[in-house]
Image (cartoon, rainbow, N blue to C red; front, top):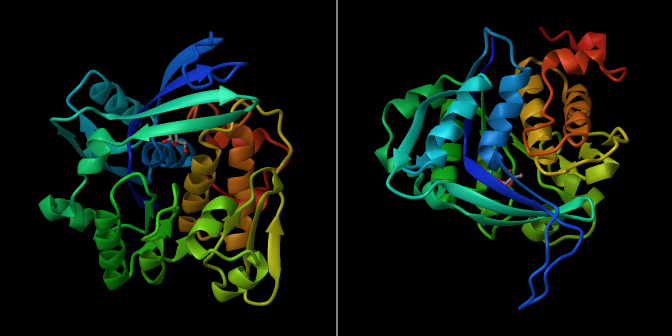
Length: 303
Ligand code: RIB
């Protein structure tokens, strides 16, 4: 049984698909509009929830707004096997991400709303839940202060943290000593460390720094060699949430005691499946779908 706590943003994604991008002062016609649940935190929680077994305990911590989106976002988490007992409803608007899909890629403007109010000072029972977890997953769409307080608490209590520093911010380095896994993409890596030589950087953080490289896969240093985990080529429909699927699947696999290299292959398969459908959460696979794929490995032995 795995106990995973995901702490972070819960947002509504307002998605416009377009074949033209508006210039300043210009109006263009979009092709299609959709409103789908998103937010890096909730996406990662749903990724875990879909892959988890009935015995696992998957819990989300965060906040939604007192608006029409709040109940929809809560219901979506529950329907995907994620407990919302520790998600507050605050007198704010819910987090919103305005997403433009153009040229098979996305551009996102994120407004935190309720996500920006997450504050550990008001927590009580939440700390007990965190202390009992096998893994805590964090990202950067809630403020840095609660993230740092949680990471420090987890480090004191011996709870592992998987930290996905997206979007990157200048304070991210303060988190590194307190987390077990750090999963920036190439761009975030550059912003956090300001270093071009990825190999040298990976060698400073063996089995900890995992850099994701989009269609090229992911890479880490195992203490002896640089390990490259290739991505599985996909018929891309929407890359939004691919990184979140990867992080959620990676987190679940690690709590099932998979070695890091295998856990990354598992995560790679999950994100491959996710980009073949629309929406941040639309393509996130269930374990049964993973098992039907030729790249699924029986030795992973997940139930
Ligand atoms: O990682 C993708 C997510 O980031 C989207 O669902 C959107 O909410 C954005 O903030």
